[in-house]
Every structure is written in C-alpha cells, then in structure tokens.
Length: 222
Length: 253
Image (cartoon, chains in turn purple, green):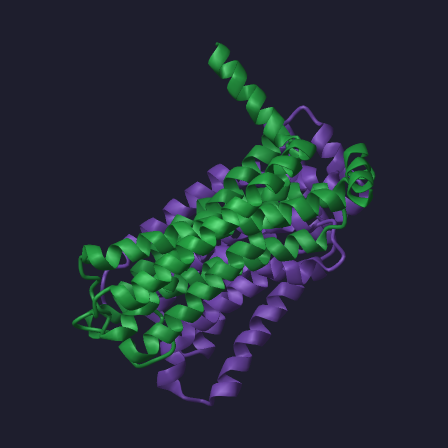
C-alpha cells in the first residue's frame, strides 16, 4: 500500500519536473497579481501594509485554485486514472499521494516566494514568519478542498468557471482564520487560537476529503 | 419484523416513479390549498392582529416573511444532503430527483431571506447591507446553492450529474457549520458591540404564533412546489417508459 503511494508520489514529481512550466505558471500568476495591487492603489505604505495579508492570501487562494486544474486532468485524459481505480490500493489513499505531490510542486514554491512579495508590500519583517506559518497550514487545506471540486469537474469542458463556483465558498473559513491570525499578530495579540483552528480544519480535510475525492472521481470516470 | 417489513415495502413503493406520480397528484391540491389557507391566516395575524413592536414599530412585521424564508433556506440544503446520501447509497432515482428539484427552491428562499433582510436592515440599521455574521453566512449559502445548480447543469448525463451533486451537497453540509462559526468569529472580532445589532428579544406569544403559522405555510409551499417539479422531472426522464405512455393515452381519451 505504501509502495503504491510512493510510486505515484514519485511519478507525479518526476512529471512535474519534466514539465516545469506547470510549476512556474501559477507562481508567475501569484507574483503578477500581487504586484498589480500597489499599482492600482498607489504607493501608499500605510494602506498597503494594512491590507498586505489580505492581498497575499486572496491571491494565494486563486493561484492554488488555478494550479489545481492539472491535478487530475492529464491522468484523466490518458486513462491512467482508470487504472488507478482498478488497483488493490484504495483510490482514496492514492489521491492523497497525488495531492501531496501537487502541494510540493505548487504550494511549496508559493511559500518560498512569499517573503519576497511581502517585502514588496511593506510587510514588516517580524510578520513574515507568521505569514509563512498561516500559508503552511492553509495551502494544504486549499489543495485538499480544491481537489474535491476538481474531481467533480475533471470531465467537463467548461470546468474552470464551475470549479470556482464550487470551491470558493468552501475556502472561506481558511481565508478568515488566516487573515485573523495575521491581524491579531500585527496588533501584538496571540494568534494561537486561529492557528489551532486552521490546524483543526487541515486535520479534518485530511481525514474526510480523500473519500469525497475518490467518490467524485468515480462519478467523473463513469 | 412485520413492522419493519411493511415500512420497507412502503418506502420502496413510494420511491417507485408511477406510484409517486399518482399519489403526489392526489395530494397536491390539498397541500397547496392548506398552504393558501395558512399563508392567508399567517399574513392576516402577522400584519394586522399582532401587536406593534415597542422598539421597531411596524417595520418588524417583515419578520413574518424573512425568518421563515431563512429557516427554509437551511432546511432545504439539509434535505438536499439527506436525499443526496440516499440517492448515492441506494441509487434511488426519486431521491436524486428530489435533491435536484430542491436546489432552485432553496436558492429562491435564500435569495428571499437576503432581500427581506436587506429591506429590514434599511430602517433598523440604516444601511442595506452589513457584514454581519448571519447575513454573510446566508450569502455564502446562496453561493453554495449556485454551485450545486451550476454543476448539475454542466454535466450532460443527468444521473451522473445527480451523483456528482450529491457528493457536493454532502461536502457542503460538512462545511456549513465550519463556515458559519468562522464567519461568526470573524464578525465578532471585527465589529464587536459598536454595531447597532439589536438583541433579539424573547418574542411575545402573540407575535410568535403568526410566525409559526407562516413557517408551516412556507414548508407546505416547499412541499407543493417540490412535488410539481418532481412530477415534471419524472415525466421528462421517464417519457419512454410504459407508465408515462399509458398515462398519456388515458389523458388523451
């Protein structure tokens, strides 16, 4: 069972490193959208500093959603997804391998580039670690929830717009707790409660969403 | 054993499309008739008989539309999740159709609750919209309904679509409490007591009774319009089956 998990994990990483554009495009999107805000708002240091967590988080949310599009698409089209359903290992376990690999490909680079963007938005240096912590706890949840949506829409032609309708409402708790944590720590309060809630949501997502994803994929393969 | 057997038989009988079509046709006039009666009684007692609120004056009377609509918006989503689960587990076609037919009705009630809330908010809070926890979670509920309807319309094969929607409805139902409490927390930390959000007073009996009548009336309206939608959907889906052709023959004679 673990063997199959590792095989798929390695395979997805390998495919991603051979097609590097898939790693880079969401990242460019992330950087570009964030740099649009100072251009639209003007070089207002106080205002930008205040809304920087919101900008980074909303953009991270959209970038994650966009990058999810190729989570199952190519496997769905070339039939390897169908082969995976035939394996002895449950599909719900295998999809976690795909999602973990996907997070390493898209979520981790996002985290790594965030300090740079935080500087662009005048985020104080001592805030950056908290920003990274919320992203570390939040983006895996976004990937897991988003995977349910993408599993439901993978067979559809106009899947992209539908996907955003399906999963953006479900992303709201993560967004709320992450930005609250950042606001609290900016004002010098403890953000432990919000971080604990984010962790709880992550644990819940890890526990439940693989079953929903597997069921949704089976419907889509039908 | 006999009781369970007969319940099971009744359940399967009710889930068979021709039987449901016949029975719902018989019940529909009574349900809608009772709805009209209760709706009239609720409106009369709410708008005319109920006393004026000492704080809000006449404006509070919109509660008799607003609150039942808000109740229905949540109730129907739960109905969708339950019928969705039934449809997924036992592959009952009727459960799938009930789920799908509920979505537009639920979305309409959610929209109604938002609009009446907004109209109510104008004289009370002096603004059309407040990012209040309840308003926000109602808005998000509307988005969830939109997602359900969009997904159903996007998938060509309607049985596949129903199963996909059932999964989405179940995911949504797990998320609704999380969304609700996160929004509540977000709001309370943001705005605190500065906002003039009136505390709901323990409602007087003379105001409560019309509210409950209206709630029952709304529920009957839901059942009635659900039956109409389900009957249309059944005819459309089963148009090639024997009972529909027989029905058409007897109707045309």
